[in-house]
Image (cartoon, rainbow, N blue to C red; front, side, top):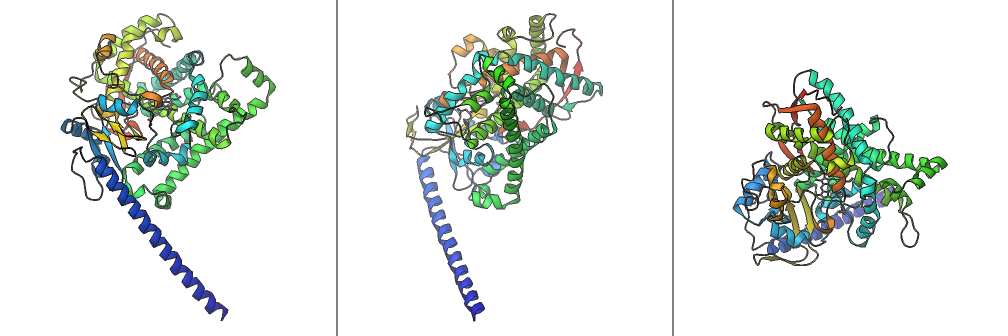
Length: 511
Ligand code: HEM
C-alpha cells in the first residue's frame, strides 16, 4: 500500500515538476521575444546585412575571415549596422569615430550578455565590474601603474626577453620557420608575474605553463560561446561538454592564481619581507590588493581579491602577447620598416646590452610602427556596452537606453573614411602632425573614456623593450607557406600560429 501511495506521489511530483519547467520555459521565451522586439525596434533605422532566420549573423561571424567580413559590411553600411548572434542577442555594431565617441566618452556599463560569460573565470574584477564598486577598485589599483612603479619593470622586460631570445637562438639554428606566439606568451606571462605579482627570478614553472594553456582554452571557448546562441543560457551551457571543458580550464586557472596569492600571503608573514615592502616607495599590484581597506577599514574579500588577480593575470599577458607577435609579423612583412626600427634602436642602445627607462622616449620610429601594427592588428578586436541612457548620433539617428553596442575596433581601424589606403602599413600616420589632424576616437587599441585600459602604459613599455631587443638579435622574415590566419579569440590570434624565419644578426649589442 505504502509503495503504491509513494509511486502515485512520485508520479504526481514528476507531473508538477514537468509542468513547472514548461511554465518557466514559456515565461523565459516570452521574455526573450519581448527583448528581441525591443532591440530590433531600437535598431529600426539602421540597415544591415541579411540575417539567417535562426542564427542571425553568427554563421558568418564564426567563419575564418570574419574580421574582414565585418570590414566589408562597414563599407556597405558606413556608420553602423545591426549584428545578431542568434535571434535574441542583437548589437549595434559601430566603427565610425563620431559614433564611437558618442558611446565611449560616457561610462556605460559592459554588456552583461557577453561579460557575464567571464564571471566563472575572472569573477567580478575591474574588467567586468560597474558602478561604485568599479570606481572604488579603479581608484585603488591606479597607483599600481604609477610611473615610479613602472620604471623598475624595464629591467624585468629586458631579462625575460633575453631568456626568450636565447631560446630562439637555438631554434634559428634549425634554419626553418617556427611559431613565435607561444614563446612570446610565456615571456609575457613571466614578465607580468615578476612585475605585478612579485614572482622570483626563476623561469615559468609547470603550473605557470598549465595556466598558459588553460587561458588559451578559455579564450577559445568564450569566443565560441559568444558566437553560439545555443550556449548563451547558463543552465544549458554547464550541461554541455563545451561548458564542462570550460569549468575544467577555470579550475586550472584558479589553482594557479590561488597559489600566487597563497605564496605572497605566506611571504608577508615573514618579517624581513614585510620590512622590504614597507621600505619600497611604491607598492606593486599585489601589495596594493592585499593591503587594501575601504573607508570603513574593511579588507577586500577573498572573492574580490581572486577576481582582480585573475583579471590582471589574463589581461596583463594575453593582450601584450598578441601585440608583440603581430608586430613582429608586420616587421617581417615590411623589411624596410624593420631596418629603420633596427637602426634607431641600435643607435639608442650603443654598446650596452639592455634598455633603460630613459631610452623608451627616444624610440620614435619604433613607437610609430608599434602603433601602426596595433591599428592593423588590434589585440582586442571588439568590446561591448549596454546603454544606461539614450544616445543621439551625429547623423540624427539615436538608440534608447538598454540597447547593446559592439565597438568593432578592428573595423574602426580599417575604416577608409578616416584611414586613407587603410590596408597599407604606414607608420607615418602616427607623426604628431598627422595625429593632431585625426579624429581622437579613430584609434582605440586600448579603448577610450573612463573604461579605457588601465595597463596601457605598462603594455607600451613592454612592447617597446621586447620588440627593440628582438630586432637587435634577429632579422625576421615571412614563411610564405604558412601565412597567419587572423582569428578573434577575445584577443586577436592566428588560427595556425605566427610562423616566422629568424636570422641571427650578431650586432654586438642587444645581448
Ligand atoms: C597591448 C596590450 C593591451 C591592449 C591592446 C589592451 C586593450 C584593452 C581594452 C581594449 C580594454 C577595454 C576592454 C573592454 O571595454 O571590455 C582594456 C581594459 C583593461 N585592461 Fe588592457 N590592454 C592591454 C594590456 C593590458 C595590461 C598589460 C594590463 C594589466 C597589467 C591590462 C589590464 C586591463 C584591465 C584591468 C582592463 C579593465 C579596465 C577597466 O574597465 O577599468 N591591459 N584593455
